Amino acid sequence: MTQRQGALPPGTRLVHIGPHKTGTTTLQGAFHRSRRALAAHGVRYAGASRQPAHAAAAIAGGTPVHSLEAPSMAHWEKLCAEVAGAGRRRRVVVSSERFANADAGAARAVVDGLGGERVHVVVTLRPLVKILPSQWQEYIKSGHQHTYEKWLDGMLRRPPYRKPTPSFWRRHRHDELVARWADTVGADRLTVVVVDQAEPLAHLRAFEVLLGLPDGVLEPEQDGFTNRSLTAGEVEVLRLVNRELARAERPAPERKLVREALVRSLRGAHVPTDPAERIATPAWARRAAAEVSAEMVAGIRKSGVRVVGDLDTLVPEPAAGDPAGSAGSAGSGDSAAAEPSLPVGAAYAAVTGALLAAAEAP
Image (cartoon, rainbow, N blue to C red; front, side):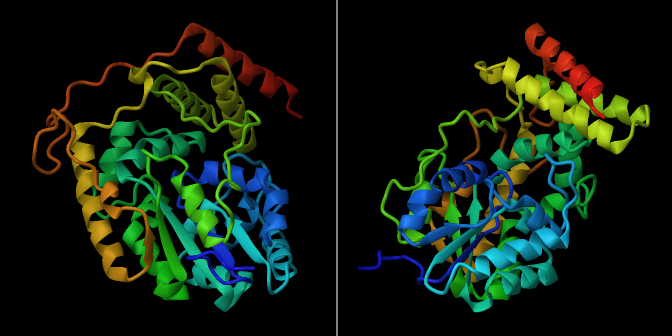
C-alpha cells in the first residue's frame, strides 16, 4: 500500500496537545465518531470518549471542568497501556487540550509515557483575538467571577500577566508552547496546524494527511452534541451565580453541580441569532492581542517546526473603526459596553435547571 505524501510513519503516536479553544471539540468529535473507519486504515483513537481528559489532567495538571471525578495517575497509566498495546505498525492518536498545561518536566513525562521517539506532537492554533472571549467564558464555567474587562486587564496590561488565571499564558503564549514541546521531541517531530475560520474543516483534512487517511474519513459529529459558546448575557448570569455561591460559602461540589446545570439549561433553552449577543472584545484588547500574536508568529517561524496553513492569518488586520496604535488606557477607542441581556425563557430555564439539579443531588 502506497503511503500518502506527508503522512507520518506507521507506528507513530500522534499527540495533539490543543491548546484550548482551537477547534479541539470538532476534531475530537470527528475522531470519536470515526473510530471504525480509522481502524480500517490502521489508526487507533485512544481513550473511550471524545478525549482522555482525566489522563491528560493527571500528568499535565488541572482538573476537567465537566467532571466531579478527580483525575488520578491510574487514568494516565491506563492510557499509556492502551497506546503501548496498539502494536508497532498501527498509528495511534491521543488528543487532549489539557496537555497544553504541561511544563517542561510534564511534557517529557507525556512523551516518555506515550512512546518516546515514536511520538509526534501536533499543535492547533487560531487567532488569539478569537481565543480571548472563548477562554474567559471557560474560566467562568469553572467558577471564576471576574468580568471580561477586568480579566483582559490582568492578562494584557498587568505584568507578569499571571493573575487572575495563571494557566492562560502557559496555554496561549503559543511560541513558548511550541518551543517547550519542540525542546522535548525535536523541531522535526512537531507540526503546527493553523485552524482557518474561512475553511472550518481544513484542520480535519490536515490530520487526515498526517495519518495517511483518505479525504473525508474525519467528519464532524452529527449526533446533536454541542459545545457552542455562551452569549454575553448567559455568561453574565453564570458569573453572578458564581459570585453568590462563593459569598454563601457553598461546598465546591455543590457549586460545580449548579454551574453544570446552568450551562446545560442555557444551551438547551436558547439559540442565539443576534451578533449583538456575542461577547465583545474592546478595541484596546484587540490591538494588544494583535501585537502579541505578531510576536508569537515570528517565534514559531524561527523554531523550524513544520507548519500546515498560513501563520499570517493568526495576526488579524485592524478592524474598521479601531484607532491605530498600541493598547492605551481603559476606554481608549472604546464606547461603553451595553449591559448584556438574556431572553426571559432562557433565564427561566437556567433557574429551574439549577434548582432541580440541586434538589436531586445526593
